[in-house]
Length: 328
Image (cartoon, rainbow, N blue to C red; front, side, top):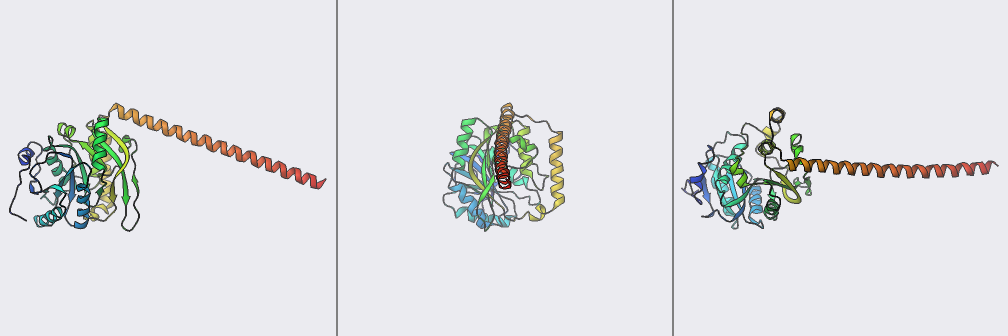
């Protein structure tokens, strides 16, 4: 690693202090100007899965609309050189690497570091997204998301996402459903949405750093609580991979999950949420459509049963007539 401790990028470091109290400074970068990027993609990594990290960063580098990778390294200083090396192996990647040095902190901490720096890019970047180092974005992610952001005027755009398990074919993962289901389900992968940076800068929302798991679910609920308007598109624009990671011990701990779910349920029960009326109307419309579809399916099934019953009675009458004829 070179001796540089802090690289000023478009005045980034000067602006960071205006946002939050978290530590974390850029320690390496690939550019002198952050302007002209559609999305700042916050890539959370511990630097221990370098081949996967390279795939994740490559997926950022090939976006049809240019993206800036904000690579947040949540690890000791000895890992920084490895991650910087991975970044430099991708010539087309625009990136800044930030050291989230408090390794004892939980999963929300590196994401908050990334958000802190993304907010400082308000005048240069339109939206922010998240990507774990074992997941990938599909090439049209940024273009379609930014297009939907402009067409809908929403604050958050969600898209569909595929799911993959090593050694198996990629399969359908998440498909958008009415967003108010977030009050009962954690169903939106962290790599499948973007947030309008102007709204986030006006109403900063950060991850809860007390949670060992499902911090992403809690974050989405916070966005709803603060009145962010959600819209969905059905395009499949990302892929989350089911791979064991450095948090396996935590994720395999039932007590951690139970505590997290209790925490979130209490947050929902005790909270007051600024839900956009258009979102509620769309949810009710979706429910009415689904109810109509269900009723239509029931009607079709009833007609089919009646048809089968009629045929059965007809066959029965034919058999009885044949038997009576034989008896005669």
